[in-house]
Length: 317
Image (cartoon, rainbow, N blue to C red; front, side, top):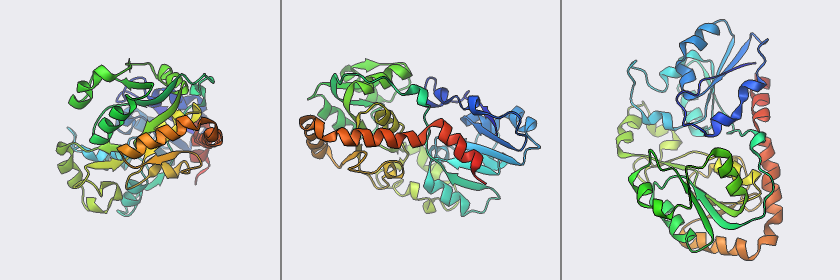
């Protein structure tokens, strides 16, 4: 299987820059081609070079966020850009099911979000209690930060291209603009990592979502008019698991974490601000009792490496 990447539309130094899927490419295979990176779906050079391939595959690692955009300058929407492929692998199970029900002439398949085993950090002494890295988009994130500051915490944030809420809480950030591997190493030095497998929907995105026919049938959009969030697996869970750090995950309406890891065996849920504090206290006060969970999660994460990812797609029919 030939593998082509176009990362020109990706945020620099994020996961996709570290996958190195091209190193797993078989250039002698003239039957199957896998393209990844947002702009690879629109890369005319790629499509011209591979026009005679029988199996044209696209990996969508940002689903279901693509439906938050209106048609572009080419008068194309997210579905239109999939027309160059006969298989689309997506991290969103709900969007895959919804799109397959539309009978678009191509197949959508759910697949796990991969990580490169080369990013697995060394084993470090645990210097910190709890960490959250990412933006602040909803009240749950504020609750998280307000809870963490009572501990020996780490809060990692960007300083550019951030929203007003994140900017307002920058004084509480212990680390800013970390390089990717430095962030992973910091997670590895911390006992607990907090994760939300959600994306907040900005008000201007709602009309775009509703512009798609039968948008209500996509379960990922069930809270468009309510909580204003949609589900999306966050790689923070992998990053904590490979760092031998306990994943503390907020329970939500979808719980996509369970498509990867088992609750109370590989990670812990919390339901609200009070429960978050209680779970942090329990882990810190009974750290030895969580050694099995730490090893379970680490071992489970080994199922989601880039090697396993490419192997699965290559062997699928």
